[in-house]
Image 1: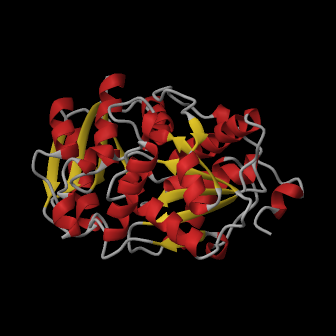
Image 2: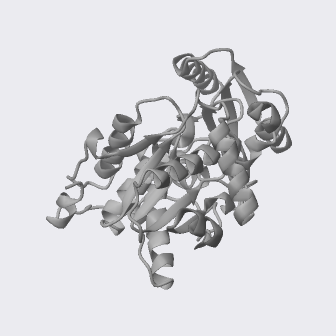
Length: 339
């Protein structure tokens, strides 16, 4: 069983609280019942509002950045470089959090999709972010450019710190292990326990943290990631979980076969799907919550499909992680998408 090592006493030697961490997010984020969606799908569905983490428009990346920027400061770094697509939520939130901490930031983004001053690019402009585009489809090219910029910065006496796409590294995943602990405490206060957690899988770090968190704090809870990018995420998530366990000096390991994934990316990453747009409209009209067409809309669409397929037991309590992403909504013409 995935959690056997923990039951055998091979628990983490180090506590997550022993790692340097900034307090950037407004925590705990709310957790509440979705009565109308629950009635529609015949399950007990709750939402964890990580769209309300309190920086700009909120979102899941802030929990990761609390650990990553703390590590950067601990290493004496003064400039953060990160990457993503043109409408990257992670990059935008990195610029915002760096501004709060007095750090310089450089966003090295793919010049793909909507890179004009709309959505998150408008927010980047308001934040005064240093945005540099690379005209490529390959992150190898982007990381090469980040390496070049880092060398240039060092030659000028700066100390740069590079954060990969999505902040999806083992250290960042610790933030979402703590999110599970937070959600468990909230569920206990409501007199319930979650059987399932459903989250977006777009770079792997958030899901990895949720898997690690259930292993540490809620071993009876299953985590299912809804894949919004045509990538083989099972080994990616497993490697991130195992890397985080190494940080905690824990001997337990998981394999790709232990990772529960469901593909719902449509025709490709950052290309809004009809199912995703219909799902975000449903959530808005039934619960007054705004999802986005790239991440959470597709995640909710995948959740609805799993409900139709009988993936969940009838009486299960299910937690849907709202990981944010509203900025990207304002860069996309949904009518054109649906037409």
